[in-house]
Amino acid sequence: MQKYFLVLCLAVVCSLAPRGLHAQESPQDICPRPAIGNAVPEPEDLRSRNGVLSIQLTVRNQREKDGSTRYCYIYGNGVQSPNLRLKSGDLLIMKLKNDLSDADQPASTHQHGQRSAADYSNPCQSGAMTSTSTNLHFHGLTVPPVCHQDDVLKTSVQPSDPPFEYRFRIPDNEPPGLYWYHPHIHGFSKAQVIGGASGALIVEGIERANPDLAGLPERVMIIRDQDLLNPDSPPSKSEPVVPKTLIDRDGDSANNGTGFGKPAKDLSINYVPVPYPDYPPAVITMKPGERQLWRVLNASAITYLNLAVLYDRKPQELGIVALDGVPVNADGVTKNVLNGQNHIGIPPGGRAEFIVQGPPAGVSGLLVTRTVDTGSGGENDPNRALATLTASADAPEPRSRLSASPELLPPPTLPWLGNVAPVRTRRLYFSEKLLDPNDPNSATTFFITEDGKTPVAFDPSNAVPDIVVKQGDVEDWIIENRSTELHAFHIHQIHFLMMDWSGVPVNEPFLRDTINVPYYNGHTLAYPSVRLRMDFRDPNSVGTFVYHCHLLEHEDGGMMGLIRVEPADSQQANVPASHPNPAQTPRAKTSGRN
Image 1 (tube, rainbow, N blue to C red):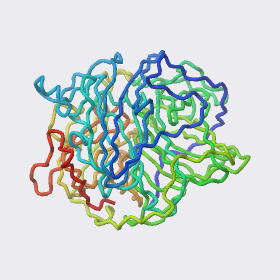
Image 2 (tube, one colour):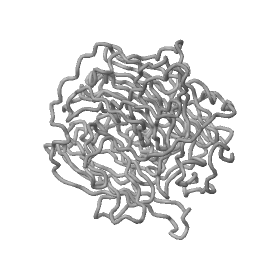
Image 3 (cartoon, helix red, strand yellow):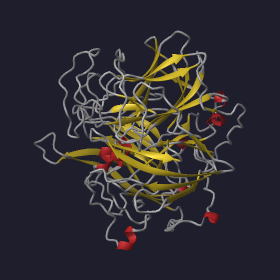
Image 4 (cartoon, rainbow, N blue to C red):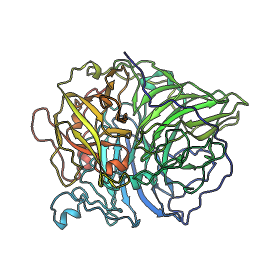
């Protein structure tokens, strides 16, 4: 049995009519945000020139009246979270200045073993994990997991440090599509991401993989979650009566299984908040019937999305062209593949790129996220509106447009991953453990464990990898979920191919870096699972990096593992301990990854 484009849920979208609009006030303008009900703004585009994009970002935060903390990346005179646009082979030079202040969060005791005071002053070796520490992860890119590139294990930048320089080339074979950048300090990832610290990185040229996209205007939409603006409000009167709101052990609204009720978190679209209980939507204006490429990033810390576009309440076909930065293809070969679906599931950290046709004149449109069943142990992700789609002949052109005459991508140099036999199969599983087994609301430790080993929460002071593989290998990983809540598996540095879903073969023409693993309902004879074909063929994957659940409170709570990819010749990986000489920065190696 074969299935295409598995999504997690089917649900009826309720009537989500907006009521009052209230601007979101802030005591300061360090991280200003648009008002509720605003038009969806387009992030500023920063493009490479002559093969180089050189910028400085400053990460800042501010305490809100309700006790929450906003985080933001600032470029120049107040531009927040710009889109970074580069081509394959381009050099990115990003200086990151940490301007975080104490957000009254407890410091983590995690450090990377016994180190001297001099080590703590070196951002490449510090490993410091506090509420004011930060770093960057370039999610989805196949760049080496080393300092100044994409290391998140030891790299830690402090407010007292000078601007820290990230410097790497986009690999020549990096698939064109949507990637993103965000902080990855263990124990504090959720706080910074849920506060808004995230931005898009786009490898240009998706029209080279699918010429049907040539000349299309494009929009980048980043959907983020945040603490509820109105946590004490009763549900909207437009919703059916639901059971009493239950609070899970993380302090959020628990999944009630109805598709309605108080969500665990509010959502925003390009920072325009769409708060509970009435979900007053943001506004997107398009020319009547205009075809656009939408690049959508789920930068939420814990919220799953199940996107749909409705015209006069009827779901519209969305033409999927890429997931997780990788264009849809057939057996790795560039073709004009366009898969039509009327809803698209995107886990936290995932991305989807798809064609949307604007509504006809006089027709009302709505972008919504349908309910996602996260299991009895999960958070509540109900039906809700995100934005109205309005047709207007005077609609402004989106800021960016794809090339009208693209040159096709060269054919791949390696076999399609689905046609490569794995050298071995591993089994891993997600599990959870209550601090007090008799108290369902007690603190929880989260685990991801290779089968046959004892579950141990991730300890950043332990440098011993959980899994060791060789560069050039291809493996199958069967990942089970032995908990009662949905998890989202993510691995750094590589992509993978889903081969089956709980034992049912699937035939998907694309790779992923983040995927949902269904929850255990307590009744089935076998735990739900996914079989993933893991691709370690790229030389840039050599080094030590992590895999984890991309619900960041789970990652911060221990649901993370360490993997070391050794060179194919078994020699030590070339891991620079200090900043490379800019004049000697090599072009990234290519391996023909599909």
